[in-house]
Amino acid sequence: MIVGGGPAGCAAVRAAPGADIVLFERSPDGLGGQWRHALAGPSHEPIARLTIENLERWAQGADVRLGVDVTLEQIIAEQPDLVVLASGALEHRRPFKVSPGASKLLDGWAVLDGAEVEGPVVVWEWGGDWTGFIAAEMLAVAGHAVRLASSSAAFGEGMHQYQRNLYLGRLDELGVELVSHVEPIRLGAGELLVRNVFSEREMTLDGVGTLVVVGGREPYFPLYEPLVEAGVNVERVGDSLGARTTEEAVHEATVAALAG
Ligand SMILES: Cc1cc2nc3c(=O)[nH]c(=O)nc-3n(C[C@H](O)[C@H](O)[C@H](O)COP(=O)(O)OP(=O)(O)OC[C@H]3O[C@@H](n4cnc5c(N)ncnc54)[C@H](O)[C@@H]3O)c2cc1C
Image (cartoon, rainbow, N blue to C red; front, side, top):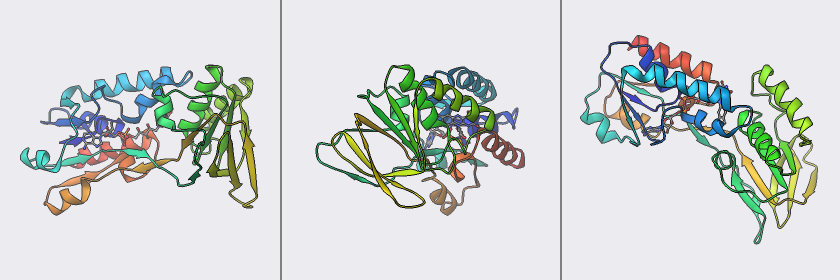
C-alpha cells in the first residue's frame, strides 16, 4: 500500500510491477503531489505537466484512489504487507508579527494555486528553492511590481543551477528587485519590517500591498508513529523525511519498494 501520489508514491508503484498495490492520494485533482503547484508557473508549467504525466504512467499498475485522506484505520483494514509512506511535506509557517490593519498576507502555494494578490508584492522566501522564484515570476508576468526577498545565503541555492540561473535571468528582465539575506519581523499597513539574518540590522520595505510568505517545506508524516506502534511494516520516503529534490524522492521510494 502507498500513501501519497507525489513523485515518491508513484515511483514506488513503478518499482514493483505486477504487485497488488493500492495508492491513496488525498487530492481529488490528480497525482503529482507538490508538482501540481508548479503548473501555474510561466516557465515551470511545461516541466510540471510532463512530470505529472510521467507520474501518472508510473502509477498505472496500481489501484489509485484519489480524494482519499487515508486514515490509520483504513490502512490496517487493508492488512498491507508493506506501507510506503510517501505523504510529502507541507509549507512551513515561520512566526513574525502582523499588526492590526496590516497588508495582505498569503502563503506561497496559495498564490501559485490562484489566490488574489494586491500589488505591489513582496515575496519572501526562506530556503532558496522553487516556490519563491515561481511565485515572483508569475506575479511579475501578471503585471505586479515584485520584490523577491530571501533569507538564504544565495538566491536559488536549493535549486539545480541550470534552473536557478535561468530564473535569475528572467526575473532580472521582468524588473523583479532582489533583496538579500532578510527575514520578516513585522508586517504593518503597507510596510514590512525585516532583519538581516547575518547582522540583525533592521530595515523597512515600504509600499507593500501583499506579502507572500514561502517558509520552506516541513515533512508531513502523522501516520508514521501510529503505523509503527500498530506493528505495520512501514517505510517512510521522499519529502516526508525532509525537503529534497524529486530525483532523491524517486530514488528512495524505488529502493523501498524493491526491498519490500
Ligand atoms: C512549486 C514547486 C516546484 C518544484 N519544482 C521542482 C523541480 O523543478 N525539480 C525538483 O527536483 N523538485 C521540485 N520541487 C520539489 C518536488 O515537488 C518534491 O521534491 C517532491 O514533490 C517530493 O515528492 P514526495 O512524493 O515525497 O512528496 P509530495 O510531492 O509532497 O507528495 C505527497 C503526497 O501525499 C499526499 N498525502 C499526504 N498524506 C496523505 C494521506 N493521509 N492520504 C492520502 N494522501 C496523502 C499529498 O496530498 C501529496 O500529494 C518543486 C516543489 C514545488 C512546491
